[in-house]
Amino acid sequence: MLNRSGPCPTLSVLKSLLASVGHLRFSMRSLLVLIVFLALVLALVVQQHRAAVRIHSLRSELVEAQAILTAYERMHGLLGDRGIHILKTATRVEILCVGQGAGYPRTPTGVDLDKAATDQLSQAILDIDNYSHLDSDDMPVPQAGFRFRGGNASLDILVSLEGSNVNSPHVDLFVFINNEDGASEYRGHACMYSKPLNDLLVSVVASGENLQ
Image (cartoon, rainbow, N blue to C red):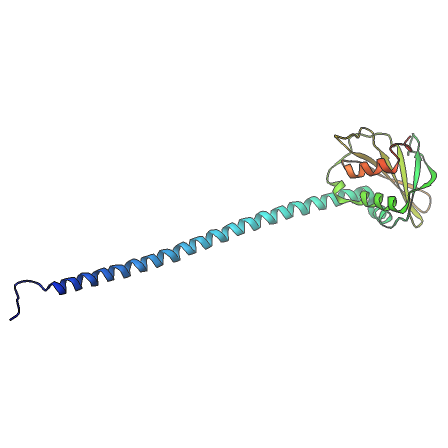
């Protein structure tokens, strides 16, 4: 005969096991939900970070583009379309003797720069980086000049290294365009804080040999 005095131990164990399995299933589901949630949050954080980095990059590119545009406008304002064209196409550059007085009298010396110096000087004056910061407060007297010839017109670039030193290398430029009819147009003056241009001009004029 069966003993009905108490609950079956096997049945109790089975119920406990089923309860544990049910609890485990619930825990696994919760864990999976948590993992999915954390993955979504992480993806959102990564996306926001990438967006912030991209925005910062775009802002930096915009600032750089604006700086380049401003520098180009300064170069164009000083040289003009014609001056830029002459510098790009010049095949001959003659050293000028610069006098004092109105219009800075300019006398050709008959001494031409070689092709390498001509190309270097043209490229340096057209270097957009040299126009990032210009100063026109001081007005030193030009010490030497260079005549860039292009077709029937020519471009006179007068220079001064007055006040330039190792700690503050700079070059003052005075720009004139000589038209076909012989008229000379003064384009303006600018002080460029450019060590490469300063060093180039020092070497071109033989450390001051041709300066007045």
